[in-house]
Length: 252
Image 1: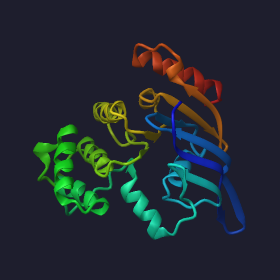
Image 2: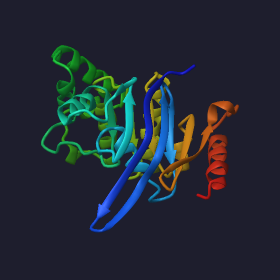
Image 3: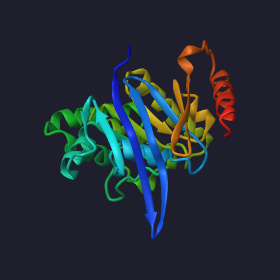
């Protein structure tokens, strides 16, 4: 039986604008299992990214409970939560958000320094990750000298530098062309194959088919789940069809 890495209980998020309140996440329960590549899908405005930001601690809950490795984290002070985000959580955004004044190598290693005092280990890990994402020859370049796909590869490397318990990815291919998207998704698939737990938000079926578990969110709640492990699927095309049929049945 798979162990639970991340758990959300009775999650609620309400945004207030003047006298108008909008319930974006409504009494939602979710469990993310170790080693899974879980994908959150749903229509625009359904609450996909909001849920991701809540689970990662970037945004605050209105009510509910979040447990990471069986320890409650939603009630922690910001300094404690920041330490968890540095050491136990990786995040890949749609826009890579690299530091413009730092090289590829520096962008990755600085994040490593925030999570570990062992500089020798951080240097070695940075070298390993840049090799894995095929960016070693670009290590001295600055973000302005990179393509969108190259920037996202650096972002993926940066998300892994502190050996996180879980990597969150928010529309990681949303700003990339087809070739760049495939490369980024191949990287995410490879790190998942190596045991990394991933939770990704996407509206793209081609991206979603890299996952083994699809959660469909509707009106701020989980409206259904597709477990691709239950099918004997030999190709990405077959996985795409399974996902397409599933989300269409949910009114996508």
